[in-house]
Length: 162
Image (cartoon, rainbow, N blue to C red; front, side, top):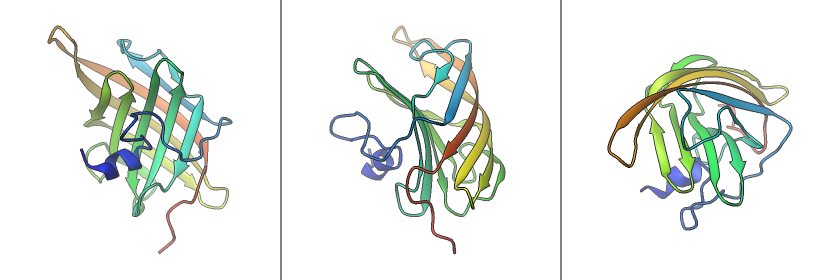
């Protein structure tokens, strides 16, 4: 897998654990699953947050639960050129995934996210609705719906203004 993908989602490619981007804990990143997604807590309530440009030309929005026994995160990667408003996951160059330490990266290919940024305060608000297809050990593929809301402060440098 492309090492830039791991970097953009702030995952150490060798250890498959959290990368070293600065994360903060005074924000909101909550995701509700229907039906409940068996590999994550429902609701998913992040304990750490990242809103920063981790790779050139993109910025990342990450919520994670870094427990010692299992590391989980929900993440989005956006091009710096994206405008505030509603965008389709998978188009508009919006990428999204769930990472679970014992299951790997699960890419989200369907859904939408609405962004609103305050470029003076360096904050981002988002609401999203996504669909996750996951194939269980017995081969059954199930589609899960997740809705989330986010409010985060920048945790690192953001995209440079053009």
